[in-house]
Length: 391
Image 1 (cartoon, rainbow, N blue to C red):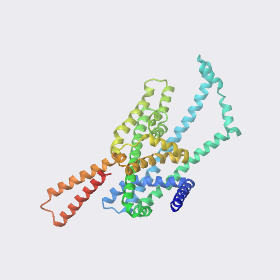
Image 2 (tube, rainbow, N blue to C red):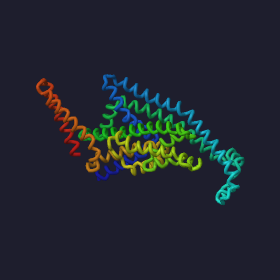
Image 3 (cartoon, one colour):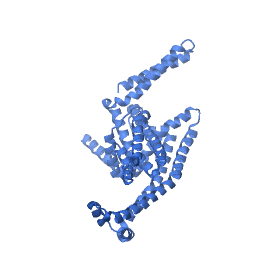
Image 4 (cartoon, rainbow, N blue to C red):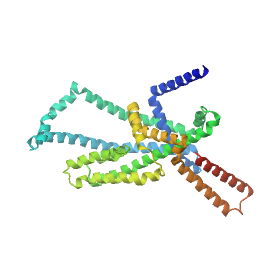
């Protein structure tokens, strides 16, 4: 009877926690994204503190640089992006008028049929401005509100990540207090592994996005592409999609190439984009994440599920959640974890070899205290190696 009561309490508690997560899902998502951002920035903060600067200075410098970078991006990209959007709208109207005027005169029956079905542009504009166009206008307003709300969410994420970075140890102790004492070491190891993996993934994606944006924008401007900023942002965002991201990035360029006469020169921007994105995928990404590979199928499934639940914010959180889940399973199950342990194992072996060289070269000049310290460090690295090997 006691066991049954325990099961009932456990199930009820689990359902209650899931209900609370659902009710406050936006807050939960923002919190998780703030943890991911803090994990991505932690190596930068550690590098600054290693150079004898205080942690408050390192936090202020890194987060000030982050905020300044976002502001500069909005200032520099905002105006050209608006101009590109205006060009797109003007070209769409011109193309529509051309279809209504020229296609009825064509010999192609298909083009004639399409032109006959299209309403006049005046009627189309009247429909959008009348009461029947309320749905379209409401959708546009909703999209605009969601766009500006993203900046508010971004501010919340940055502030929460700053709190986490400033007081990481205390928050970790609070989290560990929910586990039995004998599991604290294991839980902390799993958490640190997940944090390091997610941080490396985010830094890799951010670095690839910056490189892709720079090379594509410069290339588009030099090649005279009509919407350089808009197409660059499209490609940078589209490349995040697993499997078909590169193909999605090429779609508008191919359409523009076909509309420009389908000549070889018209498809040069598409070829250039393909080369840049493939180079980033197969040459730059392995160096940034040190050869680790994440299952693309799980990322796609997470994107579909979390986009349905959380909307646009879930799309950004899904890759992070997928990577964290893979690392978690890798830590819990040794056969799955074998490949994740290779990099820490190599690092531990290299550190032990370097330490042994130091001991061999400075054996005669070492004091007794230094010799004891080196021996203890050597034994510690050996224990780390054995621990990783046995996982």
